[in-house]
Image 1 (cartoon, rainbow, N blue to C red):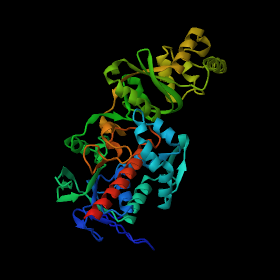
Image 2: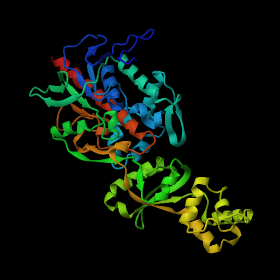
Image 3: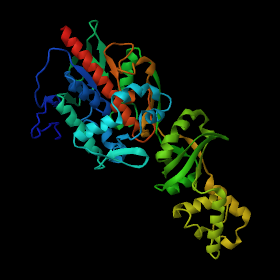
Image 4: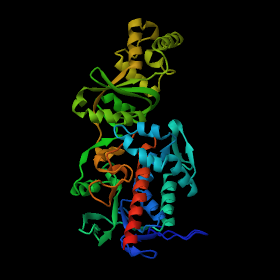
Length: 452
């Protein structure tokens, strides 16, 4: 796709996608008499909703405020795009804390297997990595975005780029009017897929919440989800960029265990991040009022029983008995971490190993299995991967994604009060809810056309 937004024709296939950039029509399709389905937001949910509605024969208009489609999708997974997961529906539902059951119908309608088949039909094979995570074989999120653009093209979707929606209203006859900076559009139905408020630089500025609230919908308070954590201890900053694998990380409120995860974490200039931290961040956000009492406890060697780890220390101390303590832990810990562990143990790094007492060894052992950090709170919404909260699910039909308050108004993707853990779950939610919304909006479109 060129910078202007033109989709070239491929051999043996006619692409009827109409793309507009800066108000200039780039190609033509035959317009139908019925008012179209208008999809607002060209991310994962919006593209899927528009493509599915077009596939079923509806005339579809997709409005995107950015210069390109799928801007946030293109940067997910550090540009690799963890598109979905291999789990079954029950596994998926467990990975949406709180509201997973709402997704049963949409996941059944369009599952991870269906998404994989669609992408492979569009020329993007997937591969499986640790934890069932699925990525494009090319490791390029851009390939996913391009394939989805192709999906829109195949199904005659009209795409308008740099088209910023400023307001929506519904007329007495049930027709919607969508106002943009360029014109007033009419729609038989509207699918709002504007995302949340995380990563605002990608265009997710929370516009959809204002429209939903104006139509009477309840907006569950918005909070950052899958977000890094600020840590009080200054020494953490010296470890910036150090990744730890196969560690067990727990969150405590005073002495109460809130949750724990096993996997990989990362030290940063402000605190900690990485998969296990992002998953645990939900507990921190939910207990934000108690943030000053929250502790992060890291077991650096969770796969080794404490008595076995003690014997390992004794063997290392015997082996390096003529060295100073700071030079005797190279086979046990990453080099950058050694000084911090010794310091947190309250030991003298220059003390000869053969002089280390049993009590001092036990203090070191305690630090290795319970390195404790003070959590000051989560980072801002701008650094969160997704948004917690959104349009109340009590007011949305889980089978169709249509509003229970306003006929013809649909919601899909991150704008809904659903958030999942890392591992491909949030993108699958966007695709599944988008698919369901597109399917039912297309049916409504056909009914309207039959009546007209």
